Image (cartoon, rainbow, N blue to C red; front, top):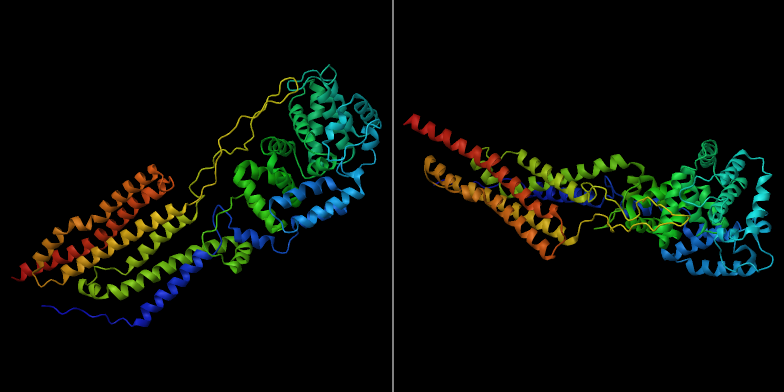
Length: 551
């Protein structure tokens, strides 16, 4: 009878491997970097030391712009800024000392004398700017003021009021055309007061001149419709400040759409646009990610201006924190995103390899010696590579998710005779995330297959130690084929169980969780039969052939 081979591996070697491997895995788990999403730790780090929502609100008040300050204050309340109560007091004090500023949201040397009706007192609250253009007298005053303008763009806009080929408005020169006339005058006045940036001016002027030449309002009518939507919701200074951050008519269209479909988020997206000075990027982010995107903007606003800039620049969703965050690593990731990503998965690969190798040295060294090569050293590397790939897939919840249409996607709006049809509701979508029960089921499936893998290795070692002839060992190995295929059977059973639990609502409906059991089973059986059973059987066949030849 052969004596069992005792392990001569020093305890310090495999214990050190376990310790170092665990440290590498901890580094990979806590490093806040992902391929297609942003970790909250990155937003927190990006916003550190940058102006906050409260600072922006006080800046607007200091510039005598209480209109924008009102929306910024509402955003501060939405994100539960600790300075919101003090801001409320400051704003109330400002409104008491300067009540004439509140209806317009600020001061304009020409607009109030033109539009204010001296026969009625001014409103005491913030008032949408188009409200002041309801009366014919106000429109006539503004028209006379603009007709003497020497700006070609202003004159081109005024000429569009003579067009009768409108499809979404009643023509401005016909009964019922007051909304279009008011919007044209408002747009021309925004241009006159230099509240429209140069890039947006170029596009609007091109549309206006084309409309005058062709006699067709065309795309310019869409822009007027967007100004109508914004002018019905924002006061004069709020509208002016917003348009200063827009670079093209498409951005204005997106913001107008957002004010219609998500009015509850207007303070948040307005504040983000002022902070980043880019309404384009903010609107694009909200359109792409819908309500989850609005929640992400609120989170970024709570951290500061740098956080908002990082979010809209990356145009990526925010992951939900599932473990401790490596704050020092957040600064490193912001400075070196590509390097940090490579470091994360390299650390996981090295950590997994060290853990598997340490277990091999401690538990399977005797069997490895007895089987003389049936346990290749690359086995730990293969397992580590497979586990790293699985970790990559599971740690990137947005990697395999196709971008779905959100409730904020722009829809075609066809007003009839100046009225705007309501946008069709869109089914709400949520950002993909990994439910805790789903993650738990995946881990359980993986652990079961690891256990099955260990059982198969122990069975091979047991057969190798039997004091029987080589041919008998070969028959014993063939007798254990069902055991060696057990990982596949367990994987199929796990997939079926997961699907049943999903149908019953016990765990989140996620096919990745269900089919991961089958995947783990295939990997387990492949490793056992290709890396271990086949080499050992080959060894037994050669030994048997050598014994027969010698006989």
